[in-house]
Length: 264
Image (cartoon, rainbow, N blue to C red; front, side, top):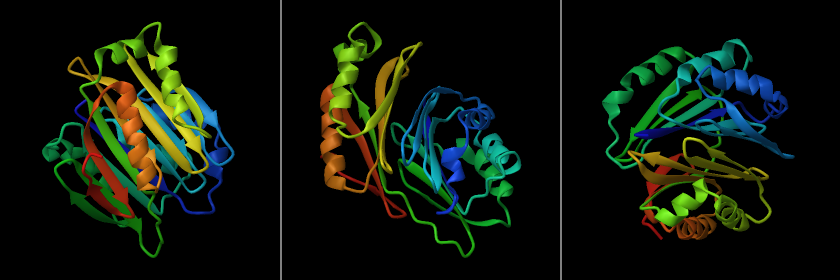
């Protein structure tokens, strides 16, 4: 698990068909990339899917796919265009290195393939720092609102807590997470080999929490789709306390500019 990706596919305000698309069709889209749905949660304003490789959140104007570096995004995007007739006005793609020092060269092939796929249709902008690389495609003449979010990496997970999420005490550990999400609808899944994912949705706000293993060591990644940074700070501390973990990285995306923040 060297790096993760966040794909935000924006279709505009009048596209409620995204939320009405059946689970089976979303599964067809995900299977193009070698991913499948393991749990789903519909709400009044969104749909949430726990996946075999992370999470998918679907809203009326966009969907957000959080996934590891092993999936083929190009096949999925081609399926959206040819099979679902789904056209984007904007696409945000972010590569994230879990430990810093993103190896840009490793991603060149996929970037070139994606750029060629949208050549002539949308304008491409790129930016990068030590932790992320950001690609943003924009259809000319379209207003594309950004979804603010925070991404957090937790390391040095407490061994008893890590075992609890995998063993008989996992319901206690999972309940602790759900208790800090009042008013949110939640869906979670425990994986074998060991792993755990939790999605939470309230209106257009969302949380995704993933426990996985990197070279045998437990690591937790968290995405908070909220605009209140004070609330994000509070939630970050709460999750770190539950996992007995150290906050390794905090990365905020406010408007269209990524910001590396000090650990609270």
